[in-house]
Length: 137
Ligand code: ATP
Ligand code: MG
Image (cartoon, rainbow, N blue to C red; front, side, top):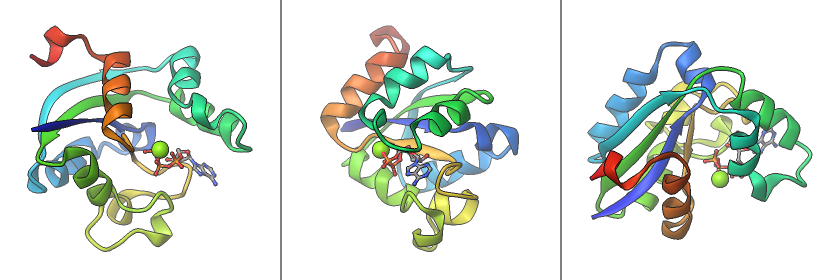
């Protein structure tokens, strides 16, 4: 069983829809095996999105991710990385398929409710940034 890393972003905690998003995650057959509500520091957000640091939206992205609490999660299931990307929907909610989290909940390409790892290797690295092995045994 594969694991992936998920973040319920500040727009989700602000609108009090983390339970609604979790219901979609669980209905898709993904199991929440680790979960913590945190306030990301600027350093954590910059490190987490380091691959995007040359992009024009990087500053805005770091501002947003530190603008309120987030819920960091480890999800487990068959093909969890690909399955969660499918459940999340396209980065831009205007292009997201029906039934996806972003289609249902996201308000813009920047404030798009959820993050999910884009590969199994990145999932491992991202999980290790926020969880110890004991947290998710
Ligand atoms: P995530 O990495 O958050 O799971 P993703 O893999 O669908 O989302 P990426 O291309 O990795 O999308 O972009 C990371 C995040 O940067 C997006 O989720 C979004 O919040 C933000 N972002 C991406 N493109 C834009 C843009 N054009 N304008 C503003 N923010 C953007
Ligand atoms: Mg991404």
